[in-house]
Length: 117
Image (cartoon, rainbow, N blue to C red; front, side):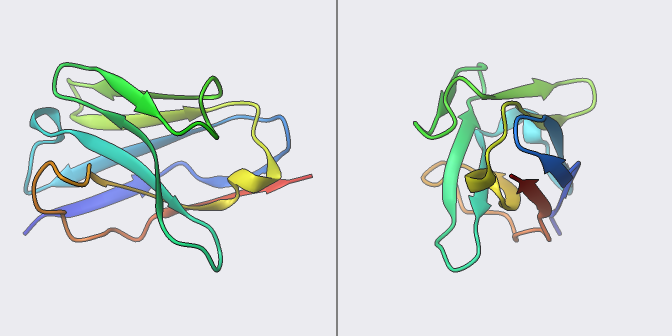
């Protein structure tokens, strides 16, 4: 049974930074293309960043230049460094296989990011 656990969220002022981490049991994140998603209240879940097996990254326009996705291969985690946070970044953040790169894992609880203006 795959279990994904996201951590690192919290309350931060606009302009601040947070670092999210994604870990999993029952699978190896190092051999999957992984995405960080977010879902704001009343909105659909959206992909904000993803990283391929070879480390290629892509970002939604809304976070480009502010967010950085990376892998820690030793820890088999996928991290999301978020800087220059804006109130519109407030959401629950999740990680999972990128859509189209295999069946999704069961969704974790996510980690809440709240940016105060």
